[in-house]
Image (tube, rainbow, N blue to C red; front, side):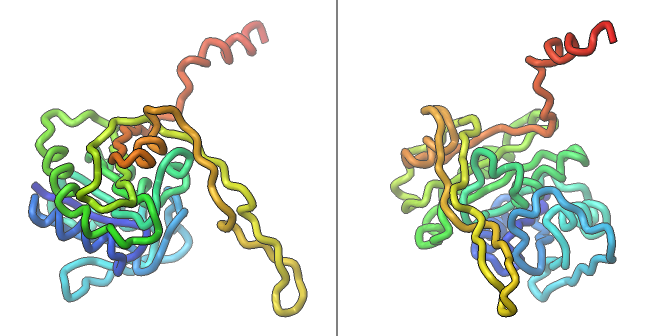
Length: 249
């Protein structure tokens, strides 16, 4: 079992260290991760400058690019044999609802799908990492279960969020759909030292919503949420409706 690991919190992130350690008990691991935090970079690629991949003393590669860059380089140049899985995380903070569209963690796992490799993205439901390490055993059980799946669905990514509680208190795993979140007061307006107006995105707080089967509700209830995702964003229910708009033109 060969596993390519990446993240968006950077090569020194505690979540990455935990994930790599757990995966090393399951298979052969290669880590290719950004040299610094790349949160909210989504599926962006670095196209206007060259990239540098440095081999660290521990065998991991650090790349001066995005999470997608890391997986692309890993699959195309740094990993000798095609891995069986691309696993990303463990992200410092949740990736639920609309977060999956912004998340570099999810994008790293999704990049494997382009090469026909199943992807798994792990996130921890808080930026306070007090209980992160206590999820080691539960994380290992989930990974062992996933890699044993025969005929893993094509073009499928599993987005998994761990609740921010001690691992021993986790109630189980729920298969969920994406919830919804709306940021409030996320843009801070201020002045630079010369009095010019500037804006800072990323503040404020999120308001979450979702029914009992949503990822948000599962994590809030003390469960691990597991949401199957795929790249195809087509709204198939509206294909005929939209087609009717243009008939006869």
